[in-house]
Length: 329
Ligand code: ADP
Ligand code: MG
Figure 1 (tube, rainbow, N blue to C red):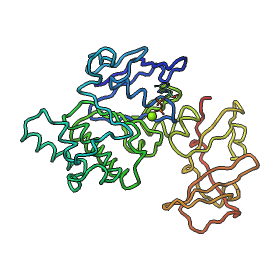
Figure 2: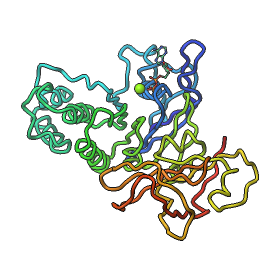
Figure 3: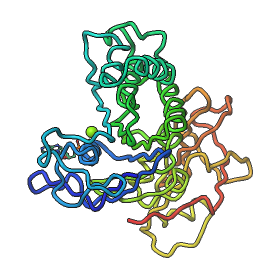
Figure 4: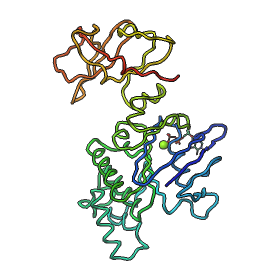
């Protein structure tokens, strides 16, 4: 188990990471989501023992993970960090890139393990190609195979989705599930793009300006985001002020300036509901995203699979009061 206790990293006067504590357990995938510059890479680097913390500490199974200034060779044998740039050896094949990580093992085990990794990471077909001759997704999977080759306890992934096209994102998602099941690895991934994190992770943290501002299951954080930032980081959302509730046919306002959140899928088309005008329609393949203007001040994004809607059309919508969630400021 990997534990971070109140980790802080300062760059000059600015705390890139501020008092972050977390626990990562075998067989689990944790995702941390945050905007660019929120401290994701710095945090991972400290967790891997590659950046010295200014305060706090990292422990693996109870033992302190030393920072780079305390050891001759920075890093920890049981913790692997896969960077955004995969840093593969360009002049040797996919197979040899992975084999290199096992160079100290006996040959027959090495060959067996490499075959196993190629299969796990869906690389068997491209094993003899050079990194430049494979796709981005295959490069990434090579980097992951190499990182997990000698069965580290902890795998840290920096923005693993960001360079992948949709088919490769899906392959990667499946790979993570297989990996955690097959190898019992503890996996922490950081990302700025959440939809993949929601479906992949067992737990989800929201990182803002170096602080872990919310933590929970993906469902909890998605449905009960603490702040507008957490709500926006976890998917499409309508943020409105409490004083506009009457426009939605709802009452119960204590503080008129309080922020409320409402997910697009919680709004239904209903002829008997509130009347609004379609202001925009976005075709998304499986559905449409629709902007419905309910008043001068309230325009809501919703979803529908209906194919007969048009901009300018009057429609009725229904919102269940309990699907509206009050945010902290
Ligand atoms: P993220 O990975 O979430 O985009 P980073 O961890 O890379 O964020 O950076 C967090 C903050 O720390 C940013 O404001 C960044 O500019 C700053 N930062 C990162 N590395 C350094 C560095 N080596 N020197 C000074 N500032 C840095
Ligand atoms: Mg980064």
